[in-house]
Image (cartoon, rainbow, N blue to C red):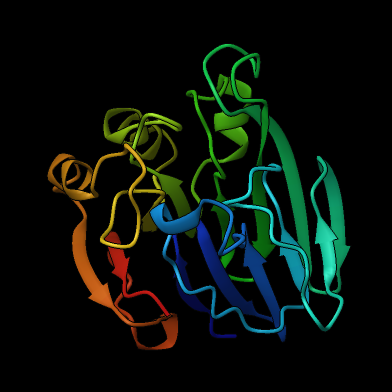
Length: 215
């Protein structure tokens, strides 16, 4: 079964797989005023995964009343199972910015992992659970999350096939975070691909970093 991924900007992606539309970390468009200018053209999802409660990750007011998962644990949805793993938004065990969930979506293609606003390198036990994924969506901008160096260390450790960097500086965002460039420069063993939409039925299966255009 083919997999599609679109990017709504920041840390928000939609994954289409096994007849389900799953949105990760949809944001509140008006959560940060003029410093946050992503459009929020969200589809009507079946499942919404929310890594933490900050306004740039926790929009819930969808008209079609999707299932919302915002707690750690294992959840089953037919052919898909989803696991939320508790981590932290900072290097002080959440004392600065709170907790964070890493989501693993288990599909027939392999693991799809969204790291949320991860602020530290996870424990060895967690990294073992995350190893050899099909897709990862990982923050790279630093300041509020891990930076390009820390993201590179995680990528080397878990060895994903496809990488989608997120939570980095763009023309639509005035947060004090880095652009994606440092991360790209540090991962030269991955081919860089720029796309509107990721559709794995038309992709070659080589280690790749995808920079998606915002929907």
